[in-house]
Length: 205
Image 1: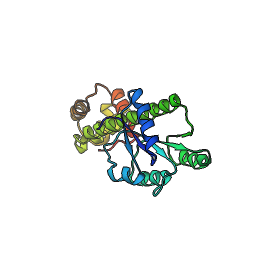
Image 2: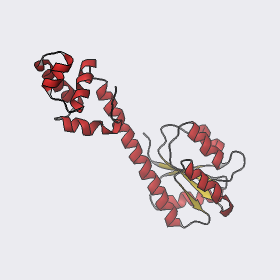
Image 3: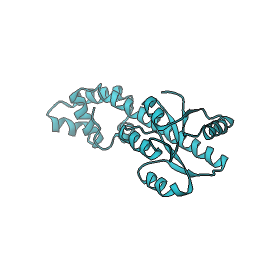
């Protein structure tokens, strides 16, 4: 994953330079783009951080870029820069999943605070996604029988009950249970349940 960066997309070079200088003064890495088309042509799934996006630009507008990015499943938080007349569009963008909007002229500190909040949001989401990926990789190590027994363990059933339900020896259940805990790197059924909670009620490999 690349360094968290604020992508400034604005057709006005003076605005781009001013925003980049402002963010640099607070130690926030940034990169500037002169148009929505330029950003879209370089946008990557490895990008992390957030986007500062002007609503009105020649060619593809900020709103159109936002729609394109959503269609591409790009989940970078988007903060719109809007003029007074663009506020209704920005409010609609919020309903559609934008992170926030800032009306021009903006307060420098408030803008940077929103950028930092958006970056923190993206960092937390990336960490959560990485955690879920690791969980799924662990689940893939389980055999079909181990997954079956894991589900019964998560349902709170004792070894003897599991053995009766599956028609196998209790010692066999104990061995499978031990292997499940070892592969999932947990020490108890409670710990296993807590670990798998991000996957919902029925984790699957």
